[in-house]
Image 1: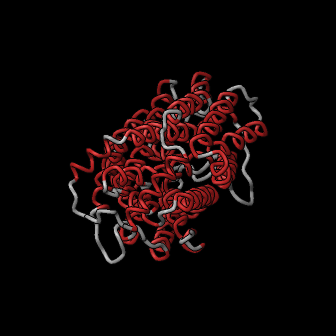
Image 2 (image 1 turned 135 degrees about the vertical axis):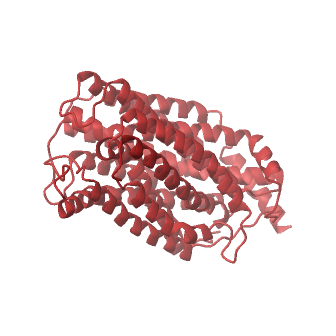
Length: 469
């Protein structure tokens, strides 16, 4: 029986549209910003990503525990969307600001602002993700909500890619003081003012979407044992004993590592290897942005098809097929000719496969919430979804760090007009074979996942009987 109306499904999706708009900026443009705009080395930026995100990943668990124990007239999780929407936007602009400091001062500023941005991101994104576990008791409906979430996430990413470069270039030209490159015929501007104002503009849009998500969604489910003050130690002990949770976290980590490495190196790959000096005059997009847009459109197609295929074949089997295909096509990408048509074609195929993965992953974390409640009597949605956010951030942390480190190992030099063949080989490796290896790890991990469709249905029915009783 359906309890979620269309407006609420859309509203829930708007929350991840907002999160994803910033997440894509940090995942695909942050390394370039830090090396070519702020002016720190790729190795220093990679190390910063790892330290800040690993620490913040474990902060997610604290946020999840705190959210599970929050009690307001709006519920446990929704209030965080209201409280942190504005700080989310403000910290984004501050993070992409370039202070007038020396190299050491800029590195310290990067560490502080990036870490604070990740903390604010946790304070709004973990409770948002936890909403999925309390909006509906029906696994099929949660699967649909998860697909709405990921559909709007990719729409949000698409909007970011459409807006970011034109905004950066436009603000750079508007306020250009001549001290740095305001614009080029092909690449995105490296003028600091353009980046600050562009991210601030997108942040304002994110805040509005968070407010709408807060206003139009509803929390419906309470735990069998509706206790907001349960033992943190006991909740953590129960989580660590949850074998399906361990498998899903490891699998999610590998999947996010796949995305982080491919996305993080793309801007370097196109500038140094493809070297196609092309920009659409009307939109202001360069070929890298077009590559990202094709990927997001293909991701969205995969997300839309995910519920249909998972309904027919099951979540686990669909997930494994998608990761296997993504591994094969990513490996083929290494041997693709340096031709934009072939590159975009392969990007579309790989991204459709990747689009299946994330909605299934989030939906399976909701199944883990049910499994945990049935076995322990406590519904710790915040804790479990914060662990999924933790795996996401660890994946991006390791992926971003690896990207920076490998660029450094292969002797990447910022502002160098022509990178060496050694550097270009490293960039090709990171956009193809390394992501393929991550998909293989995700496939292997999912093969051990025990909660198939039959088991999930049994758990849901048992919980409904207990709640009715």
